[in-house]
Image (cartoon, rainbow, N blue to C red; front, side, top):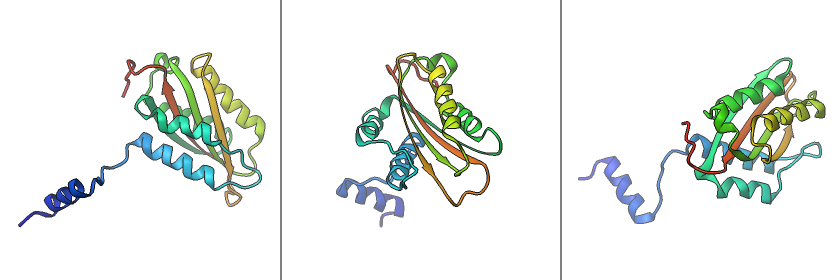
Amino acid sequence: MLLPSEQKKKYEMASGETSQPLSSTDRIIKQISEANIQNSQNDIVLDSQELKVLSTNREKSFAGMGEYVGQNAVEEALNLAISNTGLSVSAMKEVREVVVHFTLCPDITMSEIAEGIEIVHESVHADAEIFWGTVRNEWLKQYYAKVMIVLILKNTQVRDR
């Protein structure tokens, strides 16, 4: 008789399915893709080409998420997200593509988002492409920002994890 774990492994081998847990990068990529579908008229969506960057560069990607409630919510959440990628300051300068997704309360202004994007721009390679999108959640009453960021390196030689 097979143990449950052996039965599962046998099934996975036969069906080609696995139930490996998603990496943190894969989870964040999935959340960005899902959030991008649920948009309203006030949202800025990532287009399919920008989302394709995520799926084609997973092996060179580092992802992080940050949430913050209070003044400077965008900046604070973004700094947490960048920190949670695990990349050093020097490795950040090797980042050539960035995808940033903001989930925000309605009170956050475009200038606050622009300031956040400027933080990203100053942190990465000067020629890095930065793609970003927003979702405004009308139900959020507090001054709130959630930021998911994916940083894609030029090469895979720098590994800070």
